[in-house]
Image (cartoon, rainbow, N blue to C red; front, side, top):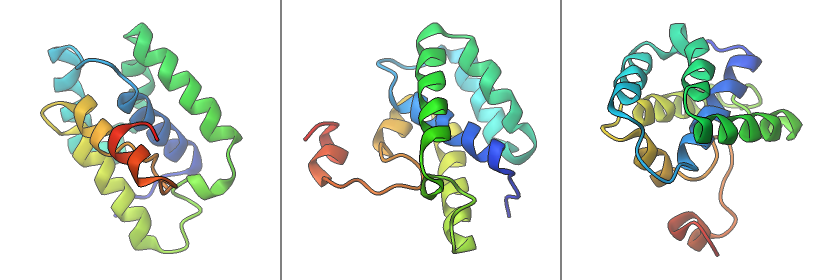
Amino acid sequence: MPNLNPQQEKTLTAFITALGRQDSALPEGLQKQLHAIGQSLETRILELPAIAASLPNLNQAYQTALSDTQAEAPAATFASSTNRSDSDKQFDRAVDILTADDPVQAAKRSRTPIGQIASNPLKRLFGRG
């Protein structure tokens, strides 16, 4: 069972959001790092900002998503989940994305930001709507 503090939750949410905004796959070395982090995410979550900083496009998307996450109402964070199993599902979803063969594509398939529901199903399916 994950036990993340609010800052870790924001970091994870922003990183997964940033991954989904990438136009191409990450370099193989970074994919391997993410896979390793995903296998022990709860203890290695603090490595995600360094991964983001290693690629300019990923870092820009991460910084934007991080500021969006910090500005949003608490409803978009893991901590606000009234049901502990919802938080667990969100954590598991992040692990699935990070350990996927292509984390960028996995994040794109899970385009809805963690903790939110797309208001338009076409937007979720096609990235526009």
